[in-house]
Length: 139
Image: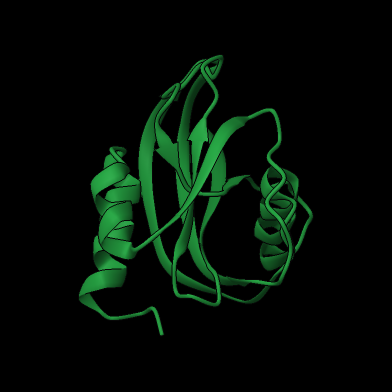
């Protein structure tokens, strides 16, 4: 069975707000749902580079201070078959710049942690946000 590694990040700005992205209406999974920046790990790349690359590709933002904060594994059935899914979650600070969305997303918002918990419906991401809230990981 294949292993798929998915990396997502909570990106924070200088005001302490978090970046959430709305998935495109054409997305095959969770269209028009709020999401966190990130995506699939490309084999052979260094983990932090991978999540920072995904953030840059999806938002145009450079980030700094990236650190892993949470991980989880699940058995998943994807469009192309079954896989062991490894989810790696990070915190990162946005460097000055404007958000420029890729075609994967159609809208973005900078929100408080509480608002992110309310707006994001995907259970795994909500679990991450609540973990960050419980352990006061945002400074």
